[in-house]
Length: 132
Ligand code: 5GP
Ligand code: ZN
Image (cartoon, rainbow, N blue to C red; front, side):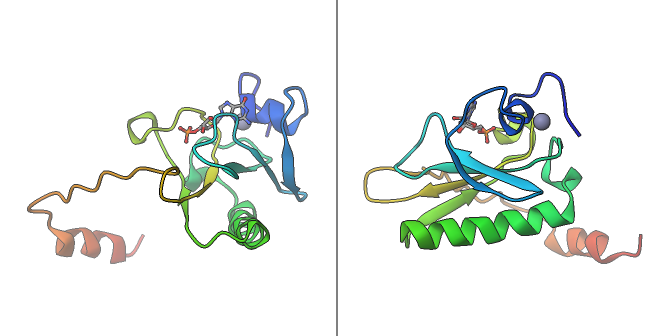
């Protein structure tokens, strides 16, 4: 539930200050300390989990609903939702979080998109579709 050395657990617990924008019984939303653009904010489950697959379904559902509400409130039409899992995938804080990052001509998320040649999508789909 609460991890001693986790800064986001400390934020939920108000041991570290944050600019709160959203809260339910299960999730917490706050402004990112190093925003890529105006309105860059973060949404986290209150319970500690490192990656998205460890996060409760109820928290995950509430986070998407929260992002939808905040995007409407900010009246942004261009934005990215970023969710990094694992350090190779650029996760720096090891408590599951979703970024909402407004995008405009000058600021926001920069994406490098480099397709990998020769991936066997059929084989991977078979694995995903196979019975547990
Ligand atoms: P990641 O690379 O793990 O997906 O992103 C972590 C995010 O957390 C970064 O955007 C970083 O600015 C933000 N962050 C790290 N420490 C703090 C903090 O103490 N307070 C707030 N509000 N944001 C933080
Ligand atoms: Zn945590």
